[in-house]
Image (cartoon, rainbow, N blue to C red; front, side, top):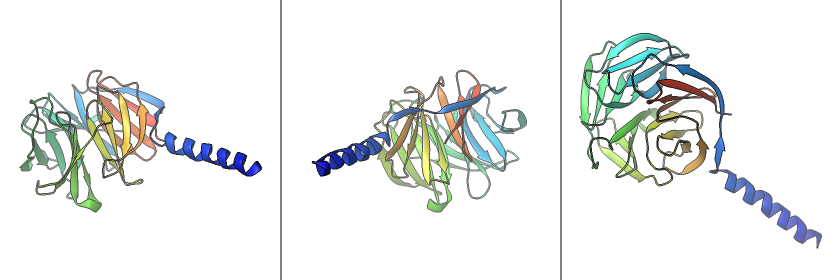
Length: 239
């Protein structure tokens, strides 16, 4: 009888741990900063600074960790929906309407432009976020919806993997977490932050109080998310 009770109790504990792995939880909101940036649509961290791309202003803004602008870098094109740094130390922006990755140095000079193959239902449902994973020597891109996809792209623009994402309504921002070797993705329409593996497997899902979340980046134990609609930056505690 005792063995049966112990077995049931053990099973409940294990089941509870497994089900909690990808359940919706709430992160601790630590701070909200107002940005002097129009339509912030992507964010990344590099050398102790944040870099925030504007959808409408053809600029990437270098800021401190409180979102105060230090430098403006031209991108020459509008409709940029994601930003990251590659292993050459250059900025790479994801342009939705042209379906291109545009590599720019820190002086604003375009180094190259890569066309990304694939389908999108219209100009506003294409590339939405980008990050670079050095260990994979590849970019990870989001296709917002129709179809919702995580794309693994070689540095030359060749599609290496196409992974369907079905646990949210759309995809709007992405970053790589080197510490956990995983990805963080935000969904604008579902208002969630998701932690997934490099193969697209859901690890955790968090509800977030952010209107039109468009970009995400990780700095140590903090998660920074930018709101396109509000022009604000939200800082959450990851732990």
